[in-house]
Length: 209
Image 1 (tube, rainbow, N blue to C red):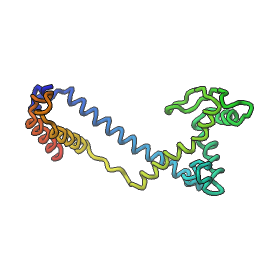
Image 2 (spheres, helix red, strand yellow; image 1 turned 135 degrees about the vertical axis):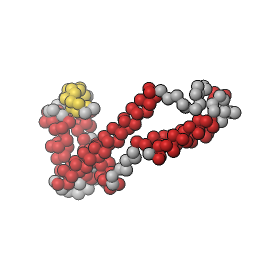
Image 3 (cartoon, rainbow, N blue to C red; image 1 turned 60 degrees about the horizontal axis):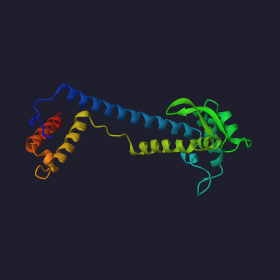
Image 4 (tube, one colour; image 1 turned 90 degrees about the vertical axis):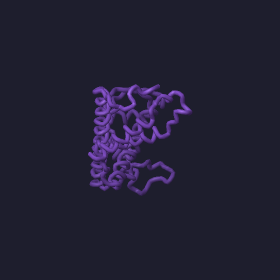
C-alpha cells in the first residue's frame, strides 16, 4: 500500500484528534494507576494501625503453615469482619450457608456480591462460595503487596505528553529503518527516506518543546 503523500504535508483534523484522544486516555490511565496505588497504600496503613502485617493475609494452610500463633486469628478477622462486609450484602448469611453441613458442595444459593465493582446477585454452589470467601484475604494480599512495592520504588516518574509522543515517533523511526522495499512488494512505492525525514523532524520538534 502506497502512501499518497510521502511528505506528510497534509494532516487532517481527524488524524490529529485521534492522536490527541490517545494521549488523553493514556494520561487518564496513568493518573488512575497512581490513585489506585495510593488507595491500596491507605489500606496497608489501616492494617498496620491494627498491628496487622500483610503477610497475615496469606493462607495459614500453605506449605509452611501459619506464620505464628496470630496468623489464623488475624486471617479470619480480616476475612469475616473487614472484607466480607464490603463484598457481600449478607455476609453472615453467606458464612452460615458455607458452614452448614446440611448442604453438600453442589447445593446452590444466590447472594448479592461485588462483581466488577458493582453489587450483583449471583447463584453459585456451596463449594464455589466457600472458595470465594476463602480467597478474599489472598486477593487483598496481592493488591496491597503491589501497593507496598510501589511505595518502596518511590513515585512513578511521569513523562510529559511531548516526551511520550516523541518516544512513539522513535519507535516508528526504528520500524521504518527495518523496512526493505526491495524484499517487500507491498511497500515498494514508499519513499522511506522522506518518511524518515518527516518523522525525525517531528521528533526533534517535540524534544525542543
